[in-house]
Length: 244
Length: 281
Image (cartoon, rainbow over all chains, first blue to last red; front, side):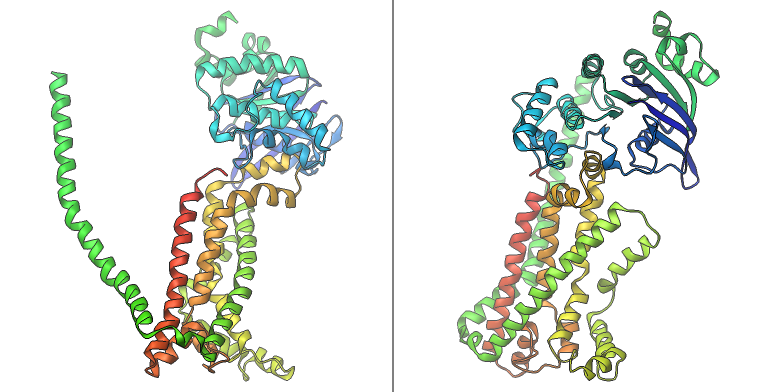
């Protein structure tokens, strides 16, 4: 499913979080929203999910205007920055949640959950509670839970933000492989350009609510559209970017 | 060199800890003496007196009527205020709307207003000369000096308990889990039953227990609206006062010990819940 964000603007009181932002994610693409903290990328992600309403502009899912469609009817998967796992449910019931509320028959639902737990390499942890898991494991439960109802779009908010560097590297490569396997259109938010460039098919660079540049990692690195992009990708990436 | 510094520092820290322990002794004793004189001694006395004089007074018809009225009042008030508290907690912590801060302040009103004034308010409103009282009186419904008035006054005095507890509890939990449920396709009701309620159950129970304790123990507001008709509009706290004023000390202490028992059960339940509140399941 392709996603179009068209001239979206969102204010929180006097603060303009998203300013006339437009971009497109093609079917099956893995797109990164990259920008410094407070740049409005998470607000944009929440607008796509329907957790926030834009003040103006529109969101299209495969040519379909969903701007005012209820969140629960959008059929998107959302992985929250701090996972937002249900603390009172086991890993199994967390992953099953999206199927239970849709009244999927139990045998089919249970089979689907087992399949997903295998996909995220958590077979054997069915009866654990979220507090008994490491950060990386929680992250994978959140991912399995989001994927269970077979969403047409997967949204991830700083998916590796709260993990330590080594786990981050591992999960990053794993997410890329996973995406190549399931081909769900995915959009993830990150402030780490190395992460964006290593994982995404295309990168949307955002600053102060505005889209600064959209392009393949190679194009952005070789031809930054403006001074902010050039500054941002070099300031934090350093000399390593040159070799990319 | 650095080793010497470290050992000096630990020695200093050790001295500090020791001096704190020295100061701690008298303080702990003072606190214990305070609690002993103000809390434990009177509580113990209630039971000692009640046992010495016997519990027969509880079985008297007037006492039984008071117990029945108190239980009836709590049975009506606690569920209503639980519902109200849930609605208020949900609305105030999960949605942003105009007038939110005003509503938050209004919830605290019964804490700020003296119960006696709350009672007078209901007399004004529902008394035979009050606007609502006259209208209801014509239809044969007496509110003031009858059970409905007692229920209303108790409802007013105890309505912040569940709401306040839940607002604080839900505020710290945030909206994220509920948002996750919504994105996963859950309806508002499914989200509430499957995600919100299991997460707040200990906070809710805590609020309900406090609400119940106050509903059964409330004196001021109920005293004003009750009219003190023995066997009819006396609740347990009011009955204790009546007996005491008539120098029937054995009866007063017997009924008081029942109320005190309720307080102890409340405290025990509260302690249990406090220890469970932070747990995941």
